[in-house]
Length: 339
Image 1: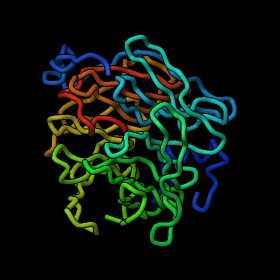
Image 2: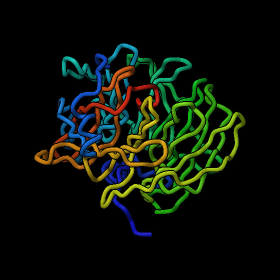
Image 3: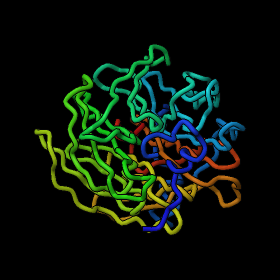
Image 4: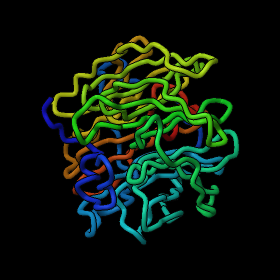
């Protein structure tokens, strides 16, 4: 297998701390963007604001994990932010302002999501193989899970919650070695009852429940595919299948999200764009930034306004970290935020 350039390896190169064992706005009706999707299968996203610049200490910036809180503001993480710089930001998308919520001298946080069980903000720390949580205001940092799972420490990339607050982690184990050892790990809502639901995955990245919480959509970065994993009432390994093969060219499958109609928004690392599919694997649209936008290399994730269709896409590159906005094909739900 050839060595593929990808988001997490970029983090590894930029941050010495990662050298470890293996390594809402208002409700919107669909507008012209959605209409163009049906006709031309292309939606052009528009720049809302720049959130970050390239950090001198790490040589890059990388926005991820956009998620709306109950206050209607958008939380975003900057994976490569150094100590002292904002690692978690809170954005008022109406006023186009941002403020620091949290930083530390330790973590490289690759995703964010609010728990339906305790309301806290959960972050995956790729650098240390941990899941941590914060109070909604960024205070009271706690370690939710740390340690080995079936003899190996996780490389947690994205996260998703079920209705009861149990946590599902896309574990990118084997990424730096180029080996298909990725996993999906379930952690009970109290931090115990840890179970590997799937293994042998190729750099597990995006993870999101479908609309009915019957299964998980999982993107595998180094194979450019989206797999579907049914999740039954009982914990344990269940069957999965390849659901979508993504024709990304030089780009690779990053994080993903699901809207109220069950459509999948697959972010692309290596191209500032997203591919949109229906639940049966038919490609519905490509969301892209304008061709004239320079210095942007990747779209990592998206958050769709709960109950509305305004979507906010995190885009990064040498020009900095940006939020771009577009009209989604359907309304936002919990599965449209974070991860």
